Image 1 (cartoon, rainbow, N blue to C red):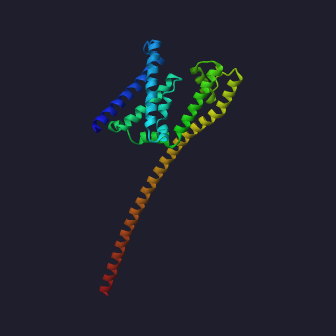
Image 2: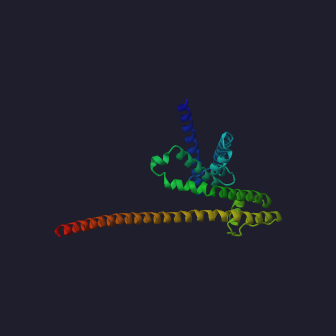
Image 3: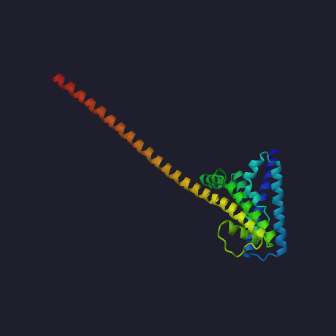
Length: 258
């Protein structure tokens, strides 16, 4: 029974990896015009993959024992099923990485260790995943509302939200209605705050790692210095013992000669 369950799990994981990579490849082909994809088949395939990953996410969430832990660990999966823009499918690669780690593929390839551990620590331990998810949620919600109020496409609304929240402000898209200006004001206040925290978290992480490495190097140098001092002290003690021994022998010799 265990072997059968493991086989089913393996087939399921392989299928998810294939679908995730295929959806990413499909979007890349569409963006860079690598293949002449007809609009309707592309939309059907893209939407079909979106539905499959959405159903998979909902089922895993229902059967998850710790819902809070599931939401944190699978934040990228939730972002990967957002239907606003095809580029969100790239978040599905996070699921591929987790599956490969679960099957210890990175260990076999020899690329697992400090590097992947640092990435996992950066994403989850520093709170980056929380800030990133909240920032994306603010951008998406603002873009959705702005799209409805200003009557523009979702992709253009998302572009406006990103340029506004990052204080770039090209001015190619701007609110014309009163409600649109209110949405923009809220996005400026909330979005800029969270994105500022996001960038500071990234900076603090790399700064802390650099300082930690420097402290580690200093501690290693200090240990080496202390070890050298201990060895030198032992040599001095040994020479002192020899001098004392020779001195005693010389005194005994002089006393006998008298």
